[in-house]
Length: 192
Image (cartoon, rainbow, N blue to C red):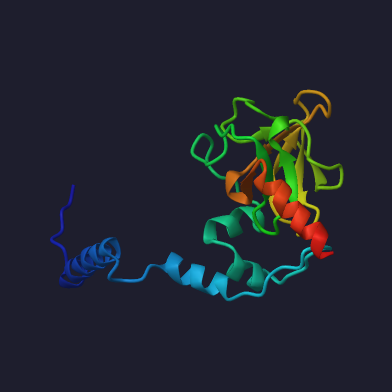
C-alpha cells in the first residue's frame, strides 16, 4: 500500500472546505438552498385551473433540487426515509409541483414498501398513467394530470377498489390537513 503526503493544494482545499462548512453551520455563508428558495419565491404564481406547461428551466426555478429530480426526472426517493410513509393525519395529498389534489388520506394504507401508498386517487382524472412492462412485471408511471409531474408508480398488487398499489414519493407531495383543505377549495371555487 502506497501512502502519499497530501500536496499543498489538497491541504489548502481541505482547510477551505472546513471553513466553508463552519460558515454554513453558523449561517455566515448563504447556502445554495437559500438561494434556490429566493429564486423560487420570485416566480410567477401558477394558474388555479387548467393544464400547466412550463419549460424545464422554469420547473427547475420553482422546485427544490430533490423535487425536480423526482417530479421532472422520474427519480425515486429512498424507502422508509421520507416524510409521508408513516403519516396518519386526515387530509389530502397534493401534487408538490402544482397543488392539484391527488389522494385523500382515507385511501392511504401501509403496503410495507416504505413509501406512502394509496388504493385509489382522489378523482379518476387526477393522474395520468403510462404503462411499462419489464421482466414480466407491469407497472404504471403515475403523473399529475395537471402538470405532468411524476409522483410515483402503480403496481397491480393493490387492494380494492382499483386493485392498484399507488406507491408515491413523499417529495412529490404536499399534505393539507382536514378542514384546511376544504377552506382552500372553497376559496378557489369562490374566486372562479
